[in-house]
Length: 585
Image (tube, helix red, strand yellow):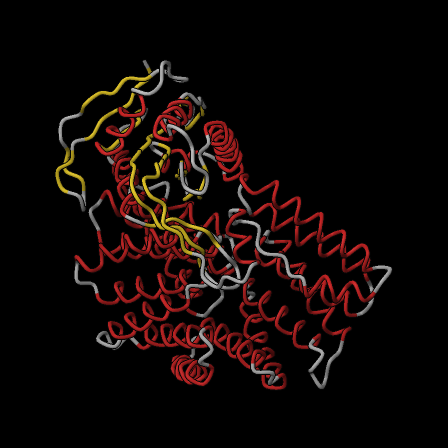
C-alpha cells in the first residue's frame, strides 16, 4: 500500500513540475522569447512523458509545434503538431483538432507544400463550421487565402481574406482582426491596389502597437517596408526595415531576420536608390544567406542566391554572379519533381552558358536578363503557346483517364521514420512511379503529399489509354518497400483510384507558373482512391466501360488483369455508385 502511494505521489510531483514548466514556456512565448520558451517546453515534455497525463502531453506537443514554426524548424513543427492532434482526435476534442489542423497547414505552407496546406486548412474549416467556432473558422479562411497568395492566385486570396475579416469582426478578437487586416493589405498590394493595401497594413499596425505584440508587429513592419520598396520609396522602406529588424533581433526570429536582411540588401542595391551602397547590400544579403543556410530554408536560399547573382552582375563580378546563379539553379532544381529534371537541365545549361559568355562581354549580360526563361514545370505545348504571346492558357481534354494513388497508413509511417528516411523513401517510390508512367504513356501532373496524380490521353493521345492506365496502376501496385517502425517490419501498400472523363487544364498565376487539371473527372478519380482499399485498384463504372470496349480490340494484355464487381457504395458528393476492383490475373 505504501509503495502504491509513493508511486502515485511521484507521478503527481512529475505532473506538477511538467505543468509549471509548461506555464513558464507559455509566458515566454507571450513575450516573444521563442528560443527560451522552446527550451522550457522541451523540459516539460520530458517530464510529462513519464506520467499518464495525455492532455498535458498534447498541450505541450502543440506548444512545441507552434514554437518550432516560429524558429523555422518546419519539419519538427509538423511532427509535434501531428502527435498532439493524434491525442486530441482520439479524445474527440474537435475544437483543438481544428486548431491543430490550421497549425499543421501553416507549417506545410512554410515548407512550400501548398496543396497539403490547403487540405489541412479545409479540414479545419469543416470542423470549425460544424462546431460553430467563429474564431477558428475565420482563421481557416485566412490561412486558405494565404496559401492561394503563395501560388499567386491573388484574386482568390483576397476573397478568402475578406470572408475571414467579416467573420472575425463578430468575435471582437483584436489580435485575430489585426492579423487578417495585415493579410488583406498584402492581398491588395499583390493586386496593385497599393493605397488600399497600405491602409489595411497601417490599421493592423495600430492594433498590434496597442496590444504590444512584437512578433506580428515585426512582420507587419517588414511587409510595410516591402510595399514602400515596390513604390520606389526607399527611405521609408529603409526606416520600416530597420524597425522590423530591431524587433526580429530581439526575438531571435529566424524567418524575420532573413526577410529583413534580404529587404535591406535589395534596398541598398537598387540603382534608383539615392543612398545606394553595394558594400552594405552585400553585407545584408550574405547575412541572410548565412542564416537561411544554417536553417536549410531552401526556398529563401533560392531567392537570396538570385539576388546576390544580380548584385555581383551589376558590379561586373561575373564569376561570382555565375557561382550564385548556379546555386540558385541547383536549389530550384532540387525543389522540382523528377518529371521535369531533363527540362531543368536543358534550361539551366542554356542559362549558365549565357552567364559564362557574360564574363567576357557585358552586353550579353543584359541580353540574357531580357530573355527571361520560363519556369520549367510546364508541358512543352504550353510553353510554346506562352512564347507565342498567349496570356491565358486553358484547354479542355475529352475522355482522359485520371489516376490517383496514395500510401495506406501514411500518417503512421511518417511518424515512425526520421524525416530524412521518409524523404528518401518517398523519392525512391515516386521515381519508380514516374518510370512506370513514362513506360505506359501517362503524364504525371503532380504529387500531393503522399499522393500521386497522373493522366493518360491529355496532351498526347494514347491508343487504348484506359488499358494503359490499368497496366500502369497494376505495375505500381507491384512496388515493394519493407520498413521497420518501432521494431516491427511492415510492408507498404498503396491504394489507387481510376476514372475517365473530361477535364480542364491550365496554368496558375502570371509570374511563377504551375500547371494543373480540374474538373469532375479529377474529383471522381480522387474519390475512387479514397474509397479504395490497401493493395487494390478501384475504378468507376465509366472507366470500366471504356476499358472493356478497348479490351475487345486487343488480342493480348501487356499486364493481364480481371475486373471484380463491388457492392454499390455511397461516395461523398456523388451518392450511390457502382464501382469495381481491378486485380492482376
